[in-house]
Length: 146
Image 1 (cartoon, helix red, strand yellow):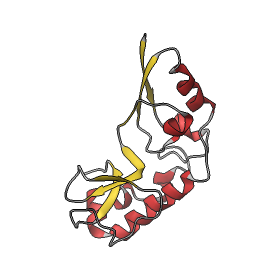
Image 2 (cartoon, helix red, strand yellow; image 1 turned 120 degrees about the vertical axis):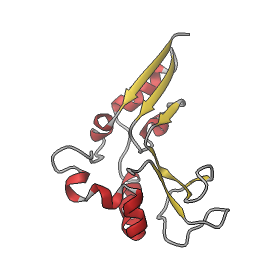
Image 3 (tube, helix red, strand yellow; image 1 turned 90 degrees about the vertical axis):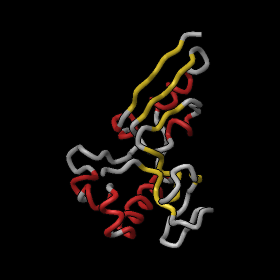
Image 4 (cartoon, one colour; image 1 turned 90 degrees about the horizontal axis):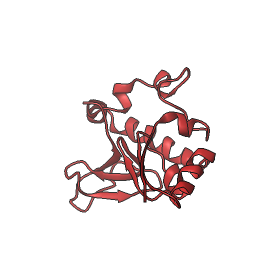
């Protein structure tokens, strides 16, 4: 079986209604990147960071994969497809793709601030006081700056 590697980024999910970060009126125009997507921002104001990602996670419940996501999933019937995505949404999974590498993390996962191996599926809001099994605060499973 032939193997194909597909690289995806913000453009594939924009069609589904997900705001991109760098486009005009994108998420970075409405937020200081270092306040919501860095370890420094987390250390200064974890509530702001949690709220930012809680809103992103909530939006996922209102939007759906588009034709491009379903096309890639359909290709798995003929080829061994590996998708490497910069996106933190779950559209590839929801469309039916089975081999996905998320370079920047995943919105629907959280992890311990102390042990990066303690990762949990998480669909609702994440709050201060939500702890991993090591007793440490959970944070979004997102690759941050810094």
